[in-house]
Amino acid sequence: MDPGKLNVVAMLKQAGLRVTPQREAILQYLVDTGGHATVEEIYQGVQPCFPHMSVSTVYNTVKHLAQVGLIKEIHVGDGPSRFDMNVRPHHHLICRKCGILFDFYIDEPPRFHLPPEAQGFQIEDYHVEVQGICPACRAASGE
Ligand code: ZN
Ligand code: MN
Image (cartoon, helix red, strand yellow):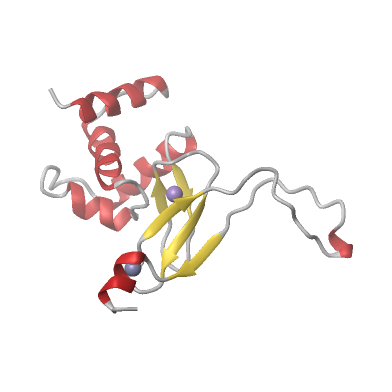
C-alpha cells in the first residue's frame, strides 16, 4: 500500500474531517507536488482521476482544509492564492524567472525596526517574500 496515501487519510482524520475521495485527492496532490499549488494547478492535477471535479469544489475544499489548519493559504507576488503544506511559520524565496518558491525560516524573535508613529503596534503575523534568481535559473543562464 502507498504510504503517502495512508498519511493523507490520517491527516484528514486527525483534523476531524470526514475522508472523502475529493479531499484525499486534493491533499495527496499537494503532498506529491510539495505544496504551494494554486486552485487551478490542483484542478488540472486531479483531472485525470477526477474528471468531474469542478474548480469550485477544489476551491471550497482547499478553503476548508485551510480553515481547519491542515494547509495554509498564502499570497506571494501578484498571482492567485497558493495552498501550502507547510503550516509552520515560515517565509518564501521566489524566483522571478521561473516562479519557483522555496520555504525559509527566520530566527525568532526577529528584530523589527518600527517607525516612531507605529511604536506599540501589536504584530500578529508577518511574511517575508524574497525575490531573486534560483540556482537552476542561474545555472541555465550561465550566471
Ligand atoms: Zn528559477
Ligand atoms: Mn511555504
